Amino acid sequence: MSPRHAKPRFAPKKCLTGLVAGAVTAGAAAMAVATAAPAVSAQTPTASRPAAHQAGQVPAPGTGKAKHARPVNDNPHVKVHTVAEQKAKRVPTAADVVKLAMSQVGTTENAGGGSKFNQWFMTTPYAKAGAARDGGSVNDYANASWCDMFVTWVGDQLGVKGMGGDAFTPSHAKWFISQGRWGTTPKPGAVVFFSWNGSGVDNIDHVGLVIKDNGDGTIQTVEGNTDDAVKVRTRNTSTVVGYGYPEYPQ
Image (cartoon, rainbow, N blue to C red; front, side):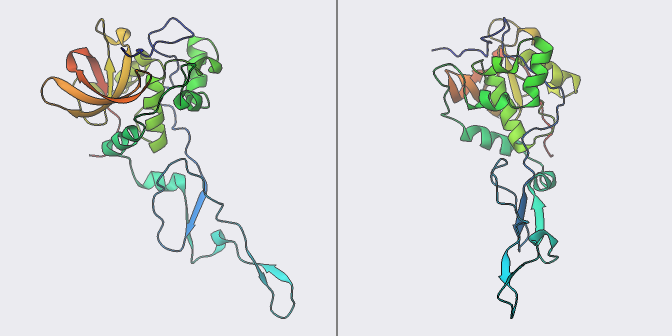
């Protein structure tokens, strides 16, 4: 069964609609994480944790009455970091992007054609900007093709700079071009744009993430919305229009 090449179900476009050129990364939680030892990075960017400022109660000596302990975030001996601060300290790498994308392999869409990536995308500024740009409403993304929503989700979860965010693949590719981060060399973690029946940015049908260059005229990729799921693929480079390069550390 051939993949649905990210063609929208609500508008006559090759892929979904919705771009925020250089949009700020959405979804970073700002919840406090308290630890007596040096703080470590959160394993999952969206994981929620109890507020670190909740004050405990201890008995006041000789009174039998409770008194409030000093809030943790007021205690100079306890170091508190927010998730956003931790993200800012560690710049995500291409290996991080590939690892997260690979962790989603096997995720499938529902009977209506949507996925968890559609549901997430609808809550973001990317969806609002796309609907404003291309017409329709945010709800139109519910069961629309989601290859670029998957790529956008990966970048957003890790806070990758220079990943961009969209659901319409030609617009996403044009954003990379406008940023001067476009080329023809496959690199791990690069965003790869495909066209099955033509060439040029306007004919882009599908998008994924590069795992590696196989060195034989093919690349290994991880893609969403391919046979209705997230899967690892081997693609001939003759189908590649170009690559977008997020800002990974050197």
